[in-house]
Length: 399
Image (cartoon, rainbow, N blue to C red):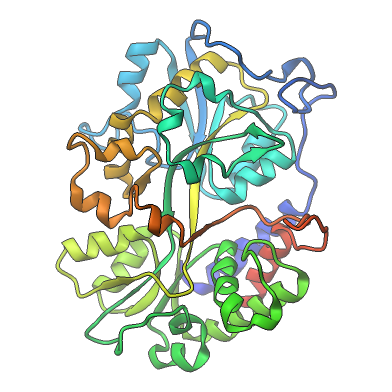
């Protein structure tokens, strides 16, 4: 997306996000939702499937062969479980949040990114998951399993993940960058003015904050996704200065691929997917893990608090986290599987698993995984900024 479209889209989302998240009918339940008798309780066993399953997800996460006859993990699931899958594809994180929060819609599950997951938990629109009912839960990457826990309860099952890193054209960008300063220090970024790309999301503020954590220690940033007003303002100011140097803010991964492939971009914030695809395509690019570390994201399956088909949902959780299905998802979507077993027994090629850092614990230690910005800081204080503040800040930076 070009810069002018980004500002208008985020501004429209702010007006919606500032409103209270919709809740269900009055009443309680073990699931912690506000859905009364429609609220799903925490499952203790998996019963017979209800014959249907309704999901909200991103395009590419529930393939049934319609995109490519060779790519289909939904049909085998339906044949095995007799749970017929209906999918609502969300275009944005805001739309995904609204769909699960609508009391008139009873979705069974959602593949939530960090900025959605935290808001759904806070608004009690998802119910805790019983990990004992998921066969391969213990096989999932340990670092990821603990990201969505509230009061000791598991609120989501990690599905796929990725990290935000630097990519550059070695023929143009010299010397090779080793720090996020290449993008965020104006003295550095202006060298390649009009040839930078950045992710089109308020969560990019977290990358700026990660850089400031080291570059401006006086800000005392501890977690780039837990920012006070002063810290958020500093990150916003940095992104505002950078704005003139950015050629494109990308939302769809292919946009950044095209920009580098055509030479319109020579430096930017990307995913391992971009480095992998462009390298295999013979393009002049290289990936860098900056010295400050990187931020990352995890998309997790969560159970809707008003789920009508909880048994089918648990069968889906077992299916979608199994090594063979994780292999298919990883290859089709260009993401890291949450189950490292997808890289065993020649399921995924060694080169793929290396490129996406699957099972690389030393790399994972350098990743700060994103979480929904909330008023409550990790230190017990309530002086942090929330996601609505971040959306406003993002719009201001790109104005």
